[in-house]
Image (cartoon, rainbow, N blue to C red):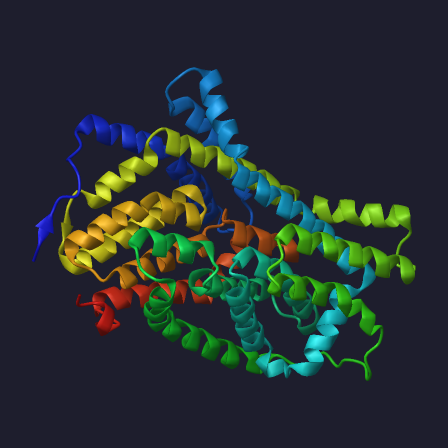
Length: 440
């Protein structure tokens, strides 16, 4: 087996600096997980509280003046991508609040329950989410379009809203991983120098078993769902328009801001027409919807600042040095790439940024170990999407949680597809599957 060192060994001083840079993330995980285990309640501890403790700790252990440290934190919290997520959360909350008040969600759920048999509703939502996310190339856009409908179906069928939201998140990550217009696909193929269609072919072999298994699970679990006994005949069909408009504009590739603004305006027109609310009532509905996203906005800002502190203090560079100091054989090289991008995503909460950060190193490891770049790109993309889908401070989980009114951690146990995607990806490395992409 080939053994090679990617970079220079680092001394104990470098190791101490790296661990100190990562320590705020460890504090966050310890505060949240340990406290939750001791209290025997994972829903009792707000994620924002654990982040605040970690942020305060990061200010203590980081070097430099307090002014510089706060400046670094604020530059992370004010990052363009972080503020874009805040903006989307605000618009999504406004749309969800007004759609609920005019009965748009109820009408869409009514329609969905009429065309899909109750026993197939779980599998149907999952496959629909997979299809739409493939077309959109964005998991967040898919979640915005479908989670409110899934939440409404949960209310009609007596199903756990967090469970229904997790179904949509899983399907959304399928497209985020595979779509030709996904940022992660573009970033991973550019980094490895392969064609998107070739990466897709290698990637679909890896995740297809996960889709089949998860669909079978949903079909089995759907057997217990009973129709809520909907009234005969569709009433007020025009209230479907806002939700259908959201999906149609998203599928047309429109920017998520335009999609949500159009949905909010459609809600307003229908609300005024049906006298569901007055002018002041509409403004109150907007405000209530935005208020429902407050906790997610706070978490996003705190996470953005904390993760920038970790990056600025060399935390991500330390992870890269540790994982690439020695790579043994092809399997070892693939596992090091998987671990590298996974930890980078854990520290950035952004799978595209994680791929961009580690892409050039992954290509170097791939070239040295003689790996097929198509499979390496697939590993890079798949593991980044898997981790992104299971961290409680990731945009996907937080968005879904906000739209159904539950805590981000309540969704985590139900994320069948991301977990299964990770399992089959590990097995694909262990058993050199698919064979045609494993023996370059």
